[in-house]
Amino acid sequence: MKTRLGILISGTGSNLQSIAAACKNPDYPAEIALVLTNQPEAKGITFAKKNGLATAVLAHQAYETRQTFEQAMHEQLHLAKVDLVCLAGFMRILSPFLVSRWAGRMLNIHPSLLPAFPGLHTHRRALEAGASLHGCSVHQVTEGLDEGPVQGQSTLQVLVNDTETSLQQRVLQLEHQLYPQVIAKTCQQLQQANLGKSAARQNGSN
Ligand code: GRF
Image (tube, rainbow, N blue to C red; front, side):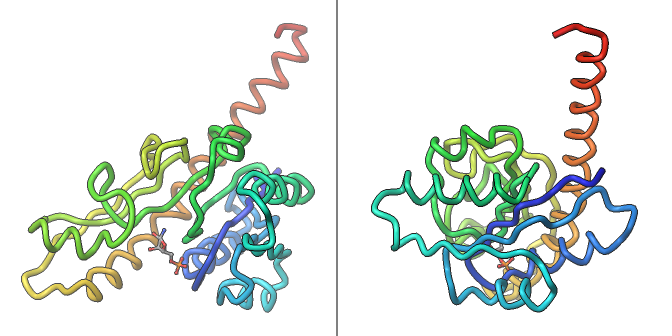
């Protein structure tokens, strides 16, 4: 059985596209069950619709509180029978309300070598700091911003003539390779954990 992914986006959705491409391989352990956005104009939603993926658009401004917005997201993910949530350029900070409900089943991709440069403007900050290595990380989502356990990283050498734009483009290429790989590894871990649980049930143990 394939692991059902819920992909959360707010913008271009190039990572969504790389995950969708990976899911086309029959041997890939996941399928996209839902693409959810808080931005009705997100380009990634157009891609999702054109490619026959299920979508949900929940404009965060329409909700009175962060919790009611997250409750609505949670319901959509639940309705779509999502097993693993993948944040891919989702530009809303998630509160413990949602994060706790998906603990161990929520990943994010971040454009830096965490723990260096959590937050925004990572490429500019890497250049300003004179970093010689830069890259991207996939991590479990926990309550602290970009703080959860790192599940995989890709690294590049910062070149003397790199600019914020060139770094952003080069790191994004790495992201497109890394995220589908880490998702596959996570799906295998979740599938093994589920097999373990059902074996325990069959043996009558807890
Ligand atoms: C990526 O750089 C990702 O690391 C960050 O947001 C950007 C999303 O890009 N979290 P895209 O929408 O997947 O093209």
